[in-house]
Every structure is written in structure tokens, then in C-alpha cells.
Length: 341
Image 1 (cartoon, one colour):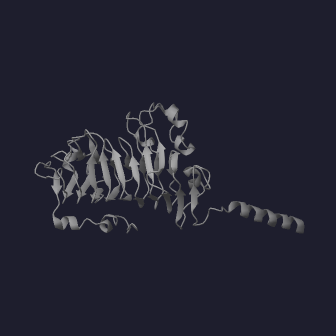
Image 2 (spheres, rainbow, N blue to C red):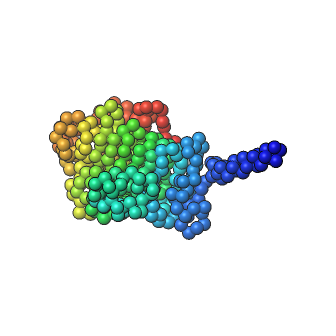
């Protein structure tokens, strides 16, 4: 009996030791393509993070090109992915909406591939499976890193797909064409600061509440910057403050946005708007949606900021109204959240 008890205690100690992960702590994990870090792929570093962490965990990514289709799952929180150099630390993938299902699934992460089976009769993967990076977890931060979808112009191709709440993006680049950034949950809040965003059509779209502060936004085609689908009960949608909008060579007709769904909310304030912005400002995509569209501007500057010919269903805020639109107020829609940056 004594030997059996000793054996059981030893086995229990062994199992406890094996279950404890050396990464279950607030230390930084280093990722490097050249093998000098603990992992060569970002996905491997994400995999070892503990579920529902109460502490702040940093995944530091050294310069390099990381060809990965990444998912940060719902059960991961308080993670920061920080690049060594924004322009030289690149996460890239190349799915687009018109790729056939079997071809795309061959290189997808297992959990993503399980979402769709070729037997369901679908021939194409569609917009919402094209992402390079999908963030389902909350309280996630990205810093100094590039997220790119470098698919050819053959359909929608999402670089960043968000579903979690309290997501922060600092000094990042988001590169793509159509549908570069999809903010996919109407109850969630995102903060973009000093980021560079480029695209062609509807390249910032979705239902989330998102504040863009001091961002540079490049329009690569004659098209539309935003396509908000803000829920009716959401008091705010997209707010662009102190941003600079620019257009690529050959571009001469850009709209600030168009109503993808009813009640879309988009506000440009204190922004620099180039001459390529259409005089009417906003496009009437769906006639029924303009009846509820919440499209606004305030105190913009530049050749494209003139308001005399704006569509009748958009608004120019008063100074008093604009003063009420603050980060604190916008991000207090469900509980108080103030980004630390």
C-alpha cells in the first residue's frame, strides 16, 4: 500500500510538472524567422499563450516576412504583438473571395478550415474567410507591424478581420485592395492610432465602433473609403479624427463612404481631405439606406473639404456637437474603456 501511495504521488507530481507551461507568465516571447527567437512563426507563439490571461503578454516579432494566416482565438486576452520595425515586420497572406474552396483550405489553419467543407456546395470562399489576421480575442494590441493581404485584384481580400472588443492598433500598416479592414462585431470597440491604411473599394467596412486617430489613409482607386454597417442601437460607428486622406496617382474620384447597411455611422473631423474627394462627399449606394445614414463632417481642411455640394442626407456638425464626440464618450457605450495611448 505504501509503495502504491508513493507511486501515485510521484505520478501526480509528474503530471503537474508536465501541465505547467513555461510560457504561463508575463515574460516576452520572441519570434524570429532566422531562428534566433523561441519560435519562427507567430502562430506558434500564439498557440502557447494561456487562455484568459489576467496579465499582459508580449509577442515580440523581429524583422522579417511571416507568410501566415493567423487567428487569435476568442479565449486569448491581454496579448500584445509588437514588431521590431513597422515597415520591415510583415504578416502576409493572399486569399481573395473568388478562390475555390479546396484550393484555399489546403494551407489554412485547421480550425479555420473546419468552418467550411467543400461538400456544402460552395465554390468560392467568400469575403469573410480571406483574412490574413483574424482577432477574435479581446484586449489585444498590435504595435509597429504590417498586416497585408497581397492577393491580386480578383475580389475582396481582407487583411485585418476583427471580432473582439477593446482592440488597439498603434503605428501599424494595413495593406490591401478591396476590403482591407473588416470590423466585424457591432458590439466591439477598436482604436487605431498613427496607422497607415490603404485600399481600393470599401477598404474600411463593418459594424464595429472604431476611432481612427492621426492615421494616413491612401485611396488607390476611384472608389469608396468606408462602408459602415453600424447597428441601429449603436450611438457611434467610424470616427476619423486628425487623419490625412491622400490619393494615388491617376485617382480623381473618391467618396468618403457609402451606406452598406441602414444606420451606417461615419464621421470625419479635423481631417485633411484632398482634391480627389467628390464634391458630394458621400455616395448613394442603396437609396433606402440614405434615409437612416448617419454621415457627418466637422472642421475638415484641404481642397476636398468644401461642403457646399455635399449630399443633402449628410450633416455638418456644430462646434458644440463635435465637442461631445470624445474617445471617452465613444468607448463608454457598454462599459468604460479608455485606450492607454
